[in-house]
Image 1 (cartoon, rainbow, N blue to C red):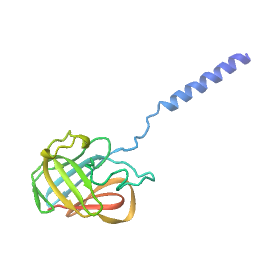
Image 2 (cartoon, helix red, strand yellow; image 1 turned 30 degrees about the vertical axis):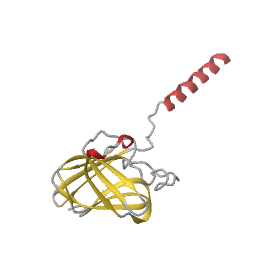
Image 3 (cartoon, one colour; image 1 turned 60 degrees about the horizontal axis):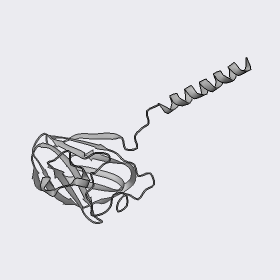
Image 4 (tube, rainbow, N blue to C red; image 1 turned 180 degrees about the horizontal axis):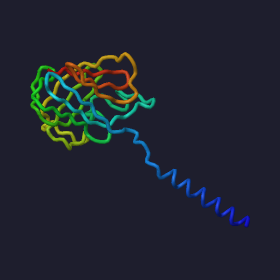
Length: 168
């Protein structure tokens, strides 16, 4: 009888251990999206949202001078249903891959025609539009990357920076 109890206890322990391990893990960079309207144009940004988790972001995890997919896991997508002006330059309605080249004082924002292109295989011939913006120190640290769509801009916020992109 004692052996049966021990076997049952071991089997139950193994069962619950396997069951607990089978639970779906939350991804480190979960999918996210931001939707809004600027001057009658509907904008939708889909991305994976990495977290800082104590790491140096700008010039560290996201190196200066390199093309970054502006998120994690897959290219960030920027969709707009009407022609807009981004930092004074025309962007036709459509769906674009969205990349950033960070520098200490300026960030280059890239809207790409090839929506499947990874940052590691970036080809400037696929650019639809490039603009340069100035990052700003954020009022508070943003742990996880996020995009906000406001009345006249899209802002990428992460760590200690906000990167506003003027849209009309």
